[in-house]
Length: 313
Image (cartoon, rainbow, N blue to C red):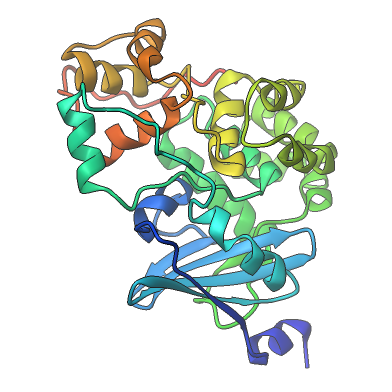
């Protein structure tokens, strides 16, 4: 019997996460969604499936609301690590208690309507960085295509009874061996593939940045020491891997205008976005998530851009 089949037949590890504060499962995990065909994450009528490349090996997680808690099952060599990380994945340690948004009707309304919103902390630095590198200088559609193609080809089968086609994010040594023509076929240009390989070479060091806490200057400096990883990529990584509450994505094509229209009724650039977010220093990523979760959309003017040529790094 194969190892994959053994894990499929094995009883899962289980836990129920039921903190005192509300938990909105879909809202918390939304930053990890990369299209309907993401091989690492699926949603069906039973709940949310997510694969994990842990320090102990691959794992598959299934998360579903049961009464007042979230029931989690995990299969695979990394199941224990995955179960252990459920509280942080779903926002434990993300303290919103001193966030005051009373001066903004939009933010106050969003906070009131989304009490289960928290910032996630995946503890998967290399994976989150690679996903951000894929998104540099291209549309979301292109980035999701590249992610799907390469992980489907090089990822390992998901342990347990995961939906068909799910795969586990490849190990760093696998990414280092991806040939140039495969990067090209997946639509990942030379600059991004080179940055991805450089990140793979130091993947173990990237994971150690978790020991420095939930982001901050020290973590950003370590991440940006990799050529091809700039302020935007570091912020996107810290938001998802470390749970950084104060890392707005400077350099994004869409976000400054969204923040400007939401908070000031007009479009702004990166500098203007940071000025608008300044009153909430220490909470700026929480403010971004409140805006995104509010349902607010900025006015649309002019032709739609076909390529997001922001995110230089």
